[in-house]
Image (cartoon, rainbow, N blue to C red; front, top):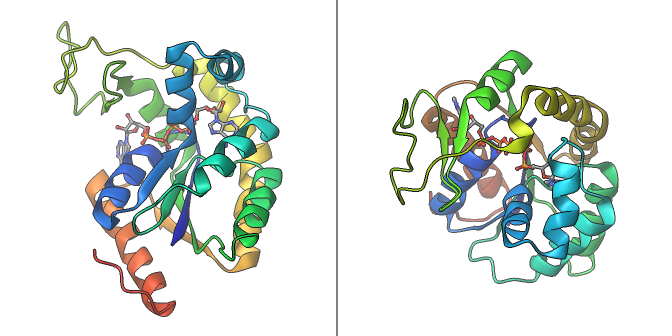
Length: 224
Ligand code: AP5
């Protein structure tokens, strides 16, 4: 099965993709995470990506399409869960073509619906561990002077693109370039929207139900 997880910045894609992939035994490919690993390692790709990411712009399509194509052939257990790709119509069409060439398709496009004021609130409150990558929502994570990761002890940081000007720009870029991708999957009959505003565990249950129903109608048995 190949699932794409769509939603605006801060909708909870990373949080939900991690939970769903673990639950279903799927390979989780988060393009933002992959780019941040390259940036932290100081590779040429990482330096190029940072110059776009830090101000909230999208990394060029050709770079992203090659990055995903190289990973689509990796063994994916029960399948692959794409988080953060595709983000433009050109990426969606390139993904269809790459999958079609090997007799596959996007089975399910899951869209997390979250209002803009909640997105801004979440991104303003997010802290990230540079050591292990764990993401904290301010209300749930360590606070005050003890901003250390509960897993690895590294000092938590804020993402450069979570500054308020960058967040405003990311939301504009999302509306202009990524929202049309929803229509692409709506027309293909694979789009399913889920309310992403409740507690993360409830959103996770709702997503798992949609995946289960879609798998059943396609004749597949998924262990939830
Ligand atoms: P990426 O890392 O993918 O960023 P994004 O899409 O802007 O999404 P975020 O990571 O900000 O949010 P999320 O939806 O994953 O939410 P999260 O789970 O963290 O991409 C970064 C950049 O890389 C892009 O701007 C672009 O430059 C580049 N890039 C990546 N892919 C690309 C592509 N395909 N093409 C071109 N460029 C690309 O949750 C957010 C916060 O809310 C967290 O603190 C979390 O704990 C909290 N939270 C989560 N769920 C809930 C909940 N239910 N209730 C309350 N709080 C919650």
